[in-house]
Image (tube, rainbow, N blue to C red; front, side, top):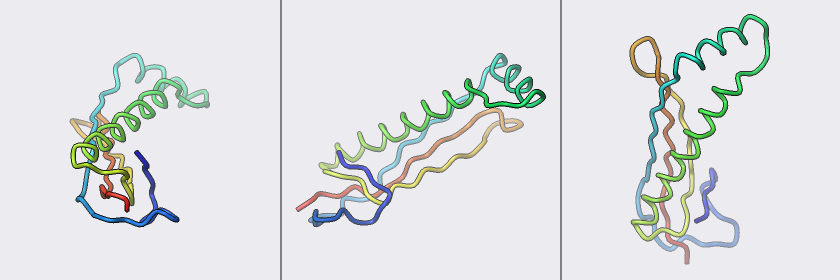
Length: 106
């Protein structure tokens, strides 16, 4: 499955537009990640725990979007956009959404 942020694929004409496909993931950060992240804020540096959670959430959202495109018979997803939002009480959870247009190539 080809996945791209662009609206076209060079040298690959689009035969059919199959519709918008999405993948959403909502993840919560646990107390230990929060504790270590707050320490990192004080002493500086990157939060590997949060970065790993964010990477996993992004990969899962993209995989769900691709699975939806496959169910529609798509060869590719174009115009992919990734959005990140905090949700829940006090922004305690992170929502990652992957959205794109499923297409069948000629």
